[in-house]
Image (cartoon, rainbow, N blue to C red; front, side):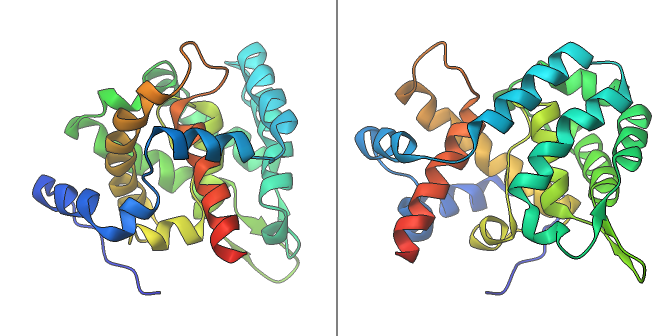
Length: 222
């Protein structure tokens, strides 16, 4: 599936067209369908909540924070790391370098996203796709999927999860501008499904959106 390049300035008219398209409607069910989807989710939530808990306890300590993130990346992105290892020191270095920005996003929800956030989102994504990349004896590469997973754990109300298939479905390039575009889409989706969910909930709206996507994808494949 081809991807579209993401432009620097967001086109809100384009957002409206995308939200009305058949492709998005497929992943944008009514209340009953959405709740049924998240109820069927059977992913590894133990590793997820373990990381969230450890990050809460270790916030401000980059090495400890990197170790908290590592089990999620190694579990949820394990096929990628079969051909090269994750370097927790690189993740810790990125956290240390970007701690101030991460802290500014940590307690915000995505519904507060504004245009002035875009450069900082792109900068974070660029840093973390390099930090969460894999390395072996011959080469190394960056991981846009690892970046989104790490950033979500660090800022679970603000940074959405994705993988390559999700990025392609929403026609976002696998990079900082694509992730920026994806945030705007998930802001719209989150606003529409938030009222479906219990309040308080034990996880963010963004995590619930990802869970629903996982179930829909499994049904589609199956």
